[in-house]
Figure 1 (cartoon, rainbow, N blue to C red):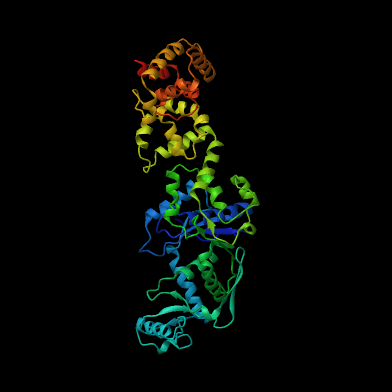
Figure 2 (cartoon, rainbow, N blue to C red):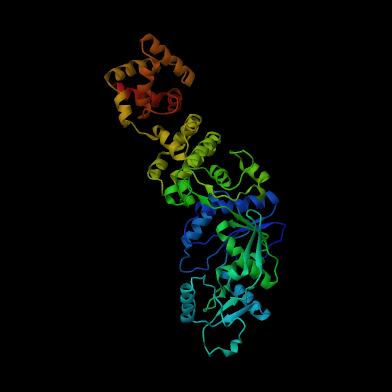
Amino acid sequence: MSNSLKTANPAVVVRFAPSPTGYLHIGGARTALFNWLYARAKGGKFLLRIEDTDRARHTPEAVTAIIDGLKWLELDWDGEPFSQFANAERHREAAEAMLANGTAYKCYLSKDELDAMRTTAEAEKRRFIIDSPWRDRDPAQAPANTPFVVRLKSPTDGETLVADKAQGDVSFPNADLDDLILLRSDGSPTYNLAVVVDDHDMDVTHVVRGVDHLTNAARQSQIYQALGWDVPVWVHVPLIHGPDGAKLSKRHGALGIEAYRADGFLPEALRNYLVRLGWSHGDDEIIPTIQLIEWFDFDGVGKSPARFDVAKLTDLNGHYIRHADDAELVRRCRDIMELPEYEGGVALLAKLDAGVEEKLLASMPGLKERAKTLIALIDSAAYLFAERPLTFDKKADKLLDETAKADLKSLSDRLEALDTWTPEALEEAVRTFAEETDLKLGKIAQPLRAALTGTSVSPPVFDVMAVLGRDEALARLKDQSA
């Protein structure tokens, strides 16, 4: 990852700054999307910063998962990902600058002293606010070699205003914002200091993140002011809840982005769904990404928590599948099969030769009309990968009784004489056979589908026959009529 911070300083610079302690989750993905859309809408820059200062919880695997998730969502960033940990010396320089200008101080309070202060506050039933005697005391009075932290000398009266583009103006009494730690006793920078320094050095103009960071915005505003730097534009977007209004959890579908990919969702569908969690444009529900970029701005961001509903996402995904390019869907099906999470994918890939891929492409118009996920689409295309003799599910097996097998034998003899093997010619031949044998079309079409696919549900049966081709379709029918 790059450690170079300075950009060309365009009018709009935003950043996505995840902590690499797990996968890219739904909330993080939406934050990244809002930042990306705003940058692309305004012709600005979208930067990626990995906030990896917590070395105990940081894992390289999590960094890879975050980057892979963003790539799959097709959220491209400008430049190389930046590692916050690599900038620790710069963070310390900023703290030293505040010590020099009197907006920070060395605090020698011991753990025992802090615990005593906390106990007193609890006994007096008041909020614990650190009131350090070292705030205005000469550090030279501290005993030699006494460990210390560096604290911000926060204003003690008045208010800190966060002028937020999503939440409106929010004021925080300074009396409630105590002197937060900037550098720990081991010299390592804290989150709030590191974020301010990095955002300043990266020329970030707009900080777009979850509303759970609103208090941090007040604290960080004080750090900006202590350093004499301009405060960025704050945009704190609402949280995402489950459909029941409770905090989003795994039971609601709060999985990592990689899980949605493995479950067969399209990135464009997920982008469309995520942007609608907290942002709106009139009554529009289905919004292509190019239109999102044109319309997106912060005046469409609401204050209330958004509700995540897997069923609605799935329905939207079905829409995008139905309108997707057939060749693109084939490519995405192959991508799904290559995922280690997809059980049976390796076996399917082994069968996906040029001939089967050509059949999959030819069958796509019928397959995609019924599928809401790529997994469902692949499952419905299983007949293309099946080897003779086919195995049958319970419903298909029940359809293939002795009477049906006899009818299929007569039908296969009729079909073998056809000169043209198209859906139209096949439908005409089957309808004529049904009329001549006093059968309703369903009485022959249902066992016909079962014999060809091994299931009772498939794309239109005449399309299935055409895609399988004359030789394979007749062979499957003869397997059941022998």
